[in-house]
Image 1 (cartoon, helix red, strand yellow):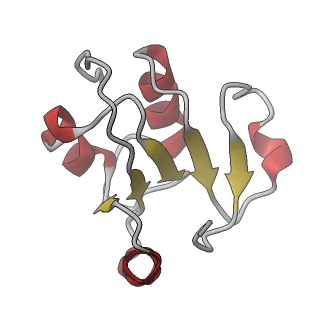
Image 2 (cartoon, rainbow, N blue to C red; image 1 turned 45 degrees about the vertical axis):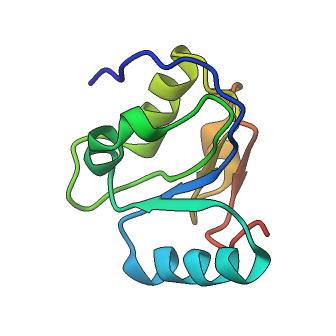
Length: 115
C-alpha cells in the first residue's frame, strides 16, 4: 500500500476516515455548523481514490480498524506521515497507550469530533 507524492498547497481541511456511517455523519453535521472545510471517507481505499484532491496541510483523523479493509488506520497514518503529512490523529476506542510507538501522531482521541 503506497500513497502518491503531493505538493504543498495553502488549503487546510479536516479529513475523517472511518467505516462507521454514524460517526461520519456526526462529524459532517458538526463541521457544517462550525463552518469547517471537511471531507470524510469510509476506508483507506476510498481516500486513495481521491488522493489527488488532498493537501499536505490537511488534518487527518483515521479510525484504527476498518471492517472492509486490509489496511489498519495506524498503517495508513504511517504512510501519510512518510510522504510528508504531519497533522495526523488516530480515532479509536482503544487506550492511547496501545499506540505509543507511533510518535509522529499528533494524538490518539475518541470518536467525538474535535471541533
